[in-house]
Image (cartoon, rainbow, N blue to C red; front, side, top):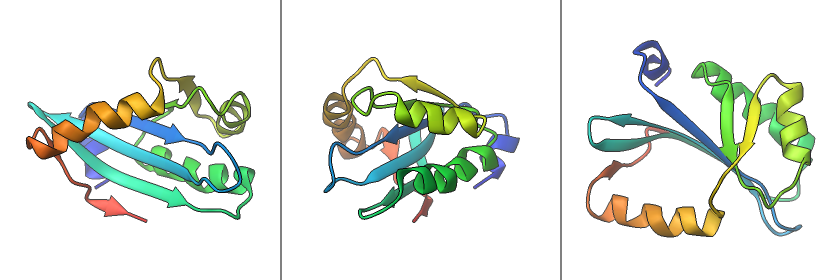
Amino acid sequence: MRRIAEQGLSLCETFDGYGGSADGFTLAIAHKQGDLAILDAVREVRPPFSPEQVVDDFATLPMSYKVRRIIGDRYVGEFPRELFRKRGIVYEPSEHAASDIYKNTMPLFTNTTASQISETQ
């Protein structure tokens, strides 16, 4: 699916860090094709893990899609921004809470305005 970046399509990447020792890290890449939003890749790591190692592993995915900016949860604070910045990726806090994003995204999948992923891990 790296060909998506080569086609010049607009990509969006999002990161959701953890809120405690029981939560994982997730990373997703999506693009829009006409009126259809397509979720291209998703990564999830569940605890226990090293946050720095996960960000190190996650940073390779946006680079392979030629993405240098991600949007992430504000809740996790400064540490993921710093970790991604060290790896050449700008981390921008989302204007919206992750729970609102999830709530607003679900209807896209049920009314076929969004397509399932093509790459998971």
